[in-house]
Image 1 (cartoon, helix red, strand yellow):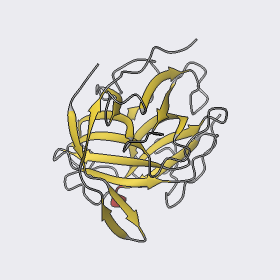
Image 2 (cartoon, helix red, strand yellow):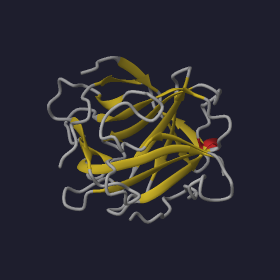
Image 3 (cartoon, helix red, strand yellow):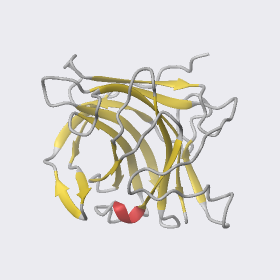
Image 4 (tube, helix red, strand yellow):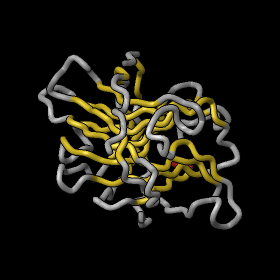
Length: 230
């Protein structure tokens, strides 16, 4: 188990204006559980969809995490896990587990399932963090990942994505239109306006909170995180 307080200053883009949310703290907590014994690409609101860079247009792609080993670390050698605003508050929680449900239909591949609960009488937010090991993103201009919700457990249609450079200041973007089918989400770097140095990237974060998450309890899966040049 990891614990460490990290400040968040979330930036939400609304109508082209940047709205700041006061800094918050969270604790990195549980690691993914061991694994339990064809995706279609669509487009989320205000997010450009991009083809896999190696397969089209001679573009470049850096695989950050495909989860296909069903274990840590990611493809860059970086750690990842879940975090809670307050691990001692049992009215909010998040857990993760590897599941054999590869976004691209690889029968031997895995995705990562995140079961979240921010239905709390207290301010609630939690999520997933992944270290980028100082990766140089300057050859690229887009971050990609696949995501889907669990139709049986329910899932939020919106989630916050944050990127951090070496300043560790989060730059946030809201993804909308999540469904119960795998979607490839591609977000241009220009949407992350607080990033000042793309040459040494620190962290990728997925956030569930009691403002954007509806319903406030549910389950989503994430897979194939990458940078690409489009």
